[in-house]
View: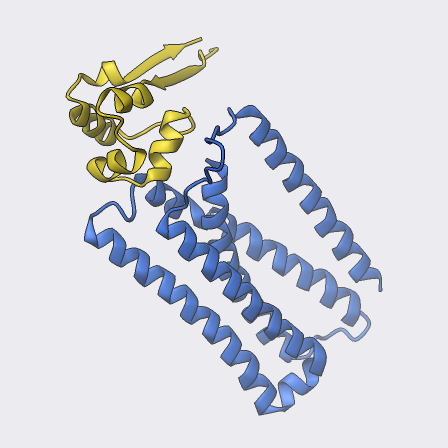
Length: 73
Length: 185
């Protein structure tokens, strides 16, 4: 069976700027992760756990699908 | 001379394979874009592992240098030489214990010093240990078999050297696994 290539995009960078230009460090502190993780998340180099994804969505006060987008190609 | 030649060829081939595999894997991933003047942030666990790997490599090289300088027989006969090597290896174990205790403390604290990525890197770090130990044993096997094949027996001292070299390689490969784990992402 040929599996489609899955990709998880996110809007963390845009959401940060819409929330008073929140810094990566501030978001990392609020989400309980390191700044490196936020940087890699924003550049789609890392897929977060569900717990971290929900925490980030909660910080921005939006639904999880408004932060993360799942696409298959 | 013959075993050393084979060991060198095998190690060179392994290094070339690892280099090209890493290059290919890196080319498949999107590049990390940083703002001008911005440096890739490092995590406390990453900095600790880099420091520990650096110190451990120096201690391991010193231990190897002492054994090579004096030779296996003097290492076996002279308590001072043996204790010096033991001291260097034990100091390395101390560095390793410090890393293990510090990371466990950070995990227990439950704040953002160690996050899920750090945990994933720590979990995957021992993956290379088995390979490193196998390569160490293969090098010893080729070297000892080539050198002592005619004698039909290997001096006792090499059992100790084989054991300690495996301990050192297991430690170094664990630390290298952590450092490389951050580079892979």
